[in-house]
Image (tube, rainbow, N blue to C red; front, side, top):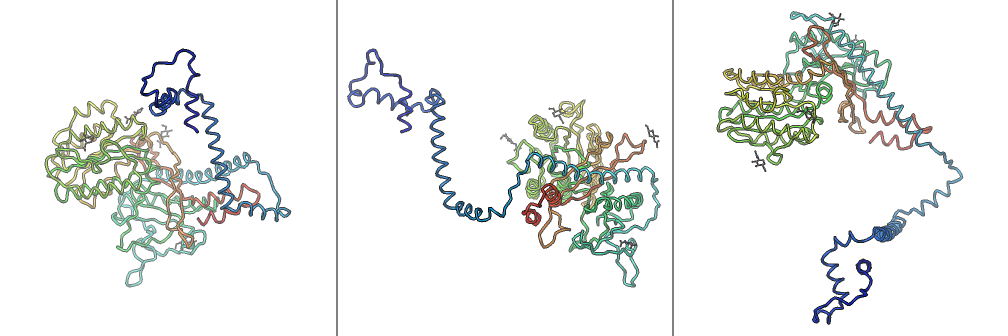
Length: 544
Ligand SMILES: *[C@@H]1O[C@H](CO)[C@@H](O)[C@H](O)[C@H]1NC(C)=O
Ligand SMILES: *[C@@H]1O[C@H](CO)[C@@H](O)[C@H](O)[C@H]1NC(C)=O
Ligand SMILES: *[C@@H]1O[C@H](CO)[C@@H](O)[C@H](O)[C@H]1NC(C)=O
Ligand SMILES: *[C@@H]1O[C@H](CO)[C@@H](O)[C@H](O)[C@H]1NC(C)=O
């Protein structure tokens, strides 16, 4: 019916003049009108639509919609038992009071509650930042400083003779239900140092010493807001001071791999979002250990990227090899899935041929430039990470073409291996492009050296003393997991800077302070307070 009505609408009234000539053979079999209809309907469906009045379509569509709606309604009624439910509700009608809720009012109140809660957490973090910055300002570095701190791994450990280990004095721990019954010490924080670092390194001992003054702020914050859980300071030197103090156990290999500087909250607070192209030299000279170190370096760089960042990895010799060939010429978000995917492809790299860095640099600059134009990336911060065992040239012409005088793309160069023959060129490239040069000679060096670039990228923030509060995306926390399952957390974090006048322009990041907020806490806080009676599903929501 539809097609015939459509066509009849389309046709003009029967011609008043003489009919157009029609071949006799056709007119015999089809009346002229019919034929025209047929041709029109077959040949120009799209064109016809444009000729038809809108009201006609509206009418048909309304008809379809109501037919469709009626059908759905009857199916829904049949299978949901809605009538039965209605009957049931009727039975209870006398006992039930209906209260009207002002939706706008409710939302406003929710917003206010949330704001207060966010504000309270941010204030706690801000107090920690102030205390840390003041403490550092007053501290004078002492390379010979001897200081016995509570090392979270060594506390309460004794040697064969029953004496406490160095840095492992007695540390009283009491199970606390606010902390999921973990044994904690709520009057002191303690300090964790990654296994690959020397826990009596002067930089660490000095840092631990001045950050001791955070203890009283931790305790004070907890007094003011008893809903706070972990509070901490992650130092740029690598140690992690956590309140309340707990005992850390090494993993099954006896290793404490946790490095606070790799955590999302740390990176997010310390740096602005960035677009990064990683160039890895896979020429013949990179064979063997160098390639292994290079891969590890790439992997460590990936560790420092988060959801706000975009990246790609190109291996180069005479040719360019995108590590993931499907993602040729663009950058992808550095989320976990993408990073894992690229890591798997890294294993396939092998070294041969000669390295043509100029081609790789051209590609990287073009890619970053194009990506910036898409407006998807970070806008502010772009970098090229170059991992190689040497460069024969300084490639001035390329930098002049793409990056000077504004030097918007920073170049970080990582020299792999012990030889320093080509170090000068790499140093020059980094310095001429507002970056940083690092030599990585052994696998053990990788992580520590890769971290260095974060200082440089946080420099603009430091110089402007931008104390932005960051809230990380939700993540799963295992320490507070209980029989109800894992707990989703968000972290409020803020960077800590050196306020010393003489280093101010250099921009020295001391670390990041943070506190965790479980997401269910936000839900409970909002729900229970905003409605006169707690919403029945709150309890269930919490367990989910
Ligand atoms: C925390 O540990 C210290 C050192 O062992 C101890 O003196 C203090 O009483 C402990 N605090 C609590 C609340 O257990
Ligand atoms: C990237 O894709 C373009 C176009 O498809 C192609 O010409 C180029 O060779 C590719 N580059 C690499 C390195 O795969
Ligand atoms: C990216 O583009 C914006 C404007 O479109 C510009 O202000 C910014 O400097 C560019 N960033 C880089 C690193 O080129
Ligand atoms: C640092 O500089 C500011 C102003 O530039 C000055 O007020 C302050 O006293 C200086 N502090 C120190 C410790 O020199």
